[in-house]
Amino acid sequence: MHSDIFNAESTAQPPAQPGIHLQHSRCVKHTVSGEAIARQGTMVAYRGNLQFEVKGQGVGNLLKRAVTGEGLALMSVRGQGEVWFADQANNCFLIDLSENDALSINGRNVLCFDSTLRYDIQMVRGAGMFAGGLFNSVFTGTGRLAISCDGQPIIIPVTPQAPVFVDTDAVVGWSATLQTSIHKSQSLRSMLRGGSGELFQLALHGQGFVIVQPSEGVKPAAAR
Image 1 (cartoon, helix red, strand yellow):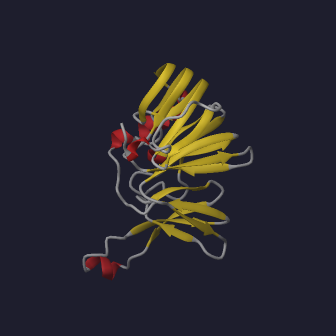
Image 2: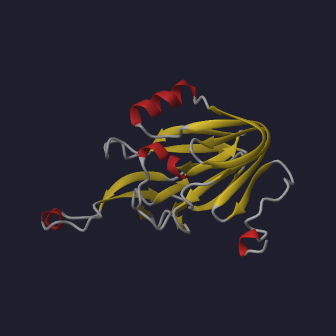
Image 3: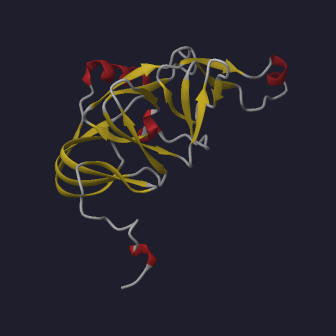
């Protein structure tokens, strides 16, 4: 049988070493030897001796998620084998964190991560009164994190001289050391005339970067 579908990028290869790798630009493969952690609903295939269980998040994160409706619904994948993760055919990217790193990521963009990483649901500073509050998952520690973006992301540097303003539906994540606030970009006169549809943005100040996807599409709550 012959077809372009059987090219090397699409064909699953024998596992080389444990860990998270790109199968291709829209799918991540995690070779599991012990435990992997992933967002519920992102597994598309697996092979080997693996068990999937709901991942406990600790009392603090569980209460935050119950109150806010935000955060990560996680599952634990234990055993020996390979598992593939994807989300609506969105683009996939790998991020390696070291002990001094701290990255704030929107829960809807998380695919999977090493069990060596720590995460905590935190309210976005300065946004407590906006739409009931904005919440992200802050990752720290040493390990690899796989995220998805609706399209090819834009990485925008943030400096003290040049703050960045991002649509809250397009922001994927940012350096957790940045200061955040909600910025209103329209005058009362503009709002009375019907507005531009771009009333509020997330403002980021300090030194770091922000990851933005070229889409304002909001996924269903069950996919967060």
